[in-house]
Image 1 (tube, rainbow, N blue to C red):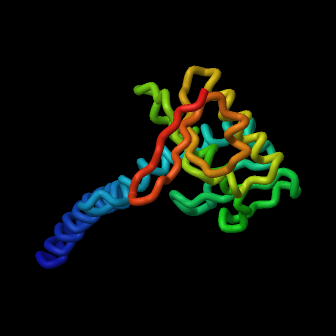
Image 2: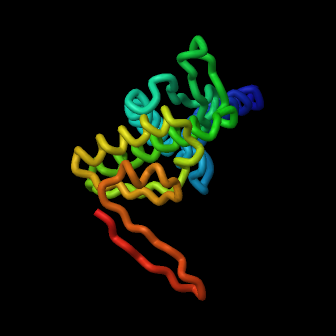
Length: 188
């Protein structure tokens, strides 16, 4: 009888310890390990959702055909919905050069918008990528950049495409002279 009473007391203690362990196990499952990786990825995924929302707003102006979404079951992976192909879901690796340029531009603009909630981002530099665009995509991208300039942002383009010079009001032309020297000419 003494042993039964002792076992019953130990079982009650064990049950209480299991409840405490369960609570801490649930907390560890939510927060993750001591290095904070799980919590960090969770926080980044919240920011990623905001970024995708803003990028999709920019895509509505740049290329209505596409919509960005998170790959289901992942935290930070991205895929494309192609509206002209019956909402086919495509991996980003299937994008052509022009398509990936427009998606990248939408993401860059979204990142700029995300960052400008507390700090105004007034200047955006774009280095190349225009050579990968067909004439229609180039026109869409340049129209979007013109619209950005009209909102007061400065947009700087770095390119070797001669057709862009005609479209830009002011530009800086750099010509190599040899021996590590170049001439700089401001036009417009």
